[in-house]
Image 1 (spheres, helix red, strand yellow):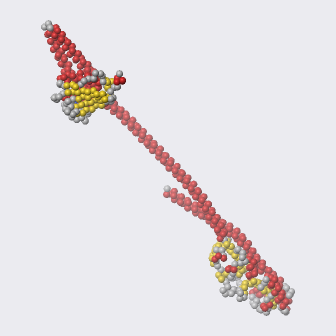
Image 2 (cartoon, rainbow, N blue to C red; image 1 turned 180 degrees about the vertical axis):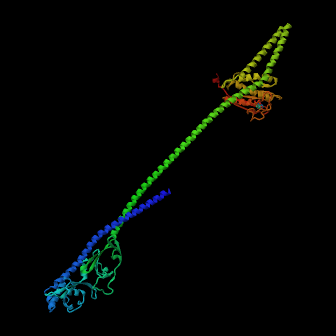
Image 3 (cartoon, rainbow, N blue to C red; image 1 turned 120 degrees about the vertical axis):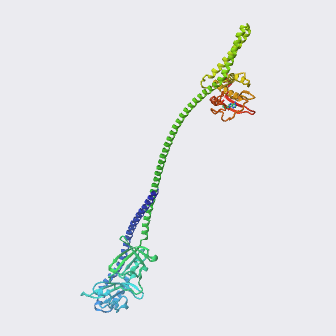
Length: 600
Ligand code: ADP
């Protein structure tokens, strides 16, 4: 994440640098282009101004040349004479051309005639460079400041040739520089003409006049300015931009702070024409173009950035989603594996349970069988007694019968026979019940008559109860009471409860067995109550092999109640036991009642 951020920052920085470079080059080209165009115009303006200056000066020069061969003036130069006529001529010419003064000088430099009459005879010009030039046969030219009012003047000195050829004098024409520059005054550009001393001599900006920069090296000049007239030119820092020269000027409002500077040499008048054009607008345009380009690039870049960011975010989201999906799939696969393992385990457990259940069922069945055997064991003593007693009785009745027949008392013998058959019938019944009890009952539940079951149990235990003098409190219902169960197993349960009750009452003073059948809605309850010592440990009595009876006693395997519990549960019924107030225990078996309509 960090490296991504860093990369992004780097990319943005690089891009911005690139934009900066691009904008800078745009600005550079725009500025160069603008300056090219500015220079084109400036060049033309400067040319125009220069041409104006030189053109005007040229006019005066030509006038001087013309006057140098004037028929009125040449004889005067050659022979001397009255200056009146010449003065008048020169005065007229000066007036008509706007010259300051026109003079005719002889070879020594003395004024022979002048448009200003008072100057005749003056020799002020004698030693000047321009006069010497004229004397050498060429045209002398001069500019400078003259007089108390510091008037700027231009001056031409043209030789006057004699008929024979040599120079005999000169025409000198002076003109006011202000007249020359007046034509270019007030124009927008700053045009000025500088001389070899670096002094601005002509300008359309008054402030620039006499501003002095460095003098041109190695150029002789006959010009000298009065002390205090010149002043330093405004502070300039010159820059070269391509082939253009740009000036930063610190000169207040009358000069542009940034200007394109052009020069044009005017050797004919010993001046250099210069022009300053405000370059600020050009710079602003270039800056604007650069800024626009930069802005466009930045906007484009920002768009690009946003798009890239979006794509990156999308890619990231897709990747995250893909990762999550993969994770989910992995989780699902893991869960599925876990589940299938769990299912396998469950299946194994179910199989184990089924096996355990089968084993339990078998154990239960075995227990029941064992219980039966034990019950049989219990009964065998009673039964042998039961069968033994009638057998003994039958024997004695039979022996007596034989004796009575021998004594000739057949009626009494007949009574004995009746008793014998009664006893035999009773024995048969006992045996039948035993057989039924020993019978293996097919598992399952059907409708059973509870009254019949109780009758059978009482039949088996009748002899024991009579023997042990137990009072039976039971009034059997007149009609069958049908319940859900298995006949033999239910008989086993009831026999077990009755046997336990008899066991509990053995050797006690009060011996009363109470049986009750109570219908309670869908349940029919049978309660077996005794007047024994009560249950010693009610919470343990249903445990297998729990017995308080001594081993070797008639009963005492501790299986009776646990088997009864299992049997009643298999019928979907309940079995419970508790001690009763006033002594004794009561066991209650709840069974599903068979509804009358079903029983019918
Ligand atoms: P067993 O009769 O072989 O001892 P049972 O499972 O039938 O086995 O009975 C377990 C124990 O429950 C008995 O030993 C006895 O202590 C107690 N018990 C059962 N019925 C009664 C009863 N009617 N009165 C008192 N104790 C009883």
